[in-house]
Amino acid sequence: MVTTARELAAEWEAGRRAGAVIGYVPTMGALHEGHLSLVDLAREECDLVICSIFVNPLQFGLEEDFESYPRPVERDLSLLRARDTDVTFLPSWTEIFPGRERVLQDFGTHVSVPRLSHQLCGRSREGHFDGMVTESLLFLHLVRPDRTYWGEKDFQQLRIIETLVRDMRLPVTVVRGATKREEDGLAMSSRNKNLSPEARVVSPNLQRVLKDARIRTLSGEPLPAVLAAAREELTSLGFAVEYLVACEEESLTEVPTLDGPVAVRLFAAARLDGVRLLDNIRVTEANHG
Ligand code: AMP
Image 1: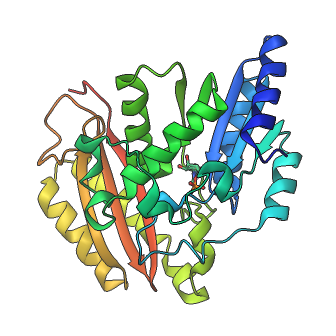
Image 2: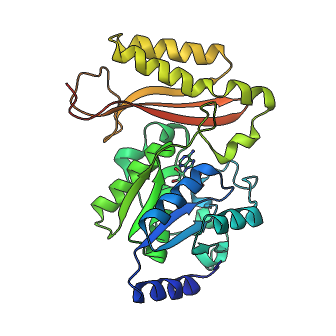
Image 3: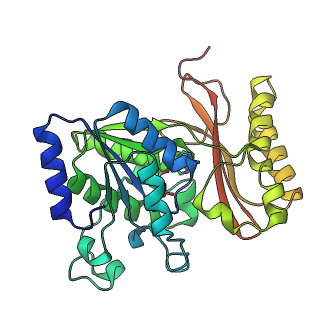
């Protein structure tokens, strides 16, 4: 484990001297098999695997759960050791934001990918993606990986990072990892442990309803009617639906039908028992039909 950018740079230089391909998995900790599947993917493809754990204050709103976000550090470190991570970067707040005590107010630089940041989760989490992308760029500069691994579970975040890397021509390849699920279909998330036992039983319906909607649209039912019925079903099960929409994968703009040549995905965010759950599912590939 390293805690400073200086120690991290020493590991990087030793790796480079040995000709290692360097893989990087950024996380906020409270690790589960979703995160660890990204570590496994990096392990398969890279020689030196670096994972960071940092709960990024820039991406939390003032009313959100930054203080209470789980931080089971010892457990995370042993999970990463068991998956053969070479370097875990666990910086302190002051290592990342030196001299800045009130990070949100004091951090002078903000990076933004506006075209992809205002829809979907950006609607209810103002500033979230700017905070995420600002911190991610900073970490990509500190870690300097050849390949970086991001989960499709947070598809909007993944598209924003892909766009940042492409537009800024960052010398790194973004690798997508498929969403890891519990056996009953619930997408793994660090926040799932906040679900009450009753809500945990209901929670897999989010994925089940998305899958049903996918089948119904592919069999020709009109997309708006399918989405409305899916939303109604989730509401009747106790979900407070924030959004349930079909979007182009590339631009994340909503589509009214599946008729275009672009890949389309269904995206949903809903609160259950106060816990915000996210999921998405691919409906069509690009250039279909
Ligand atoms: P987080 O710690 O929530 O910031 O997530 C760190 C990385 O793990 C991000 O790239 C997430 O998309 C990814 N991730 C989180 N949950 C899952 C999951 N269930 N399956 C695959 N990747 C995930």
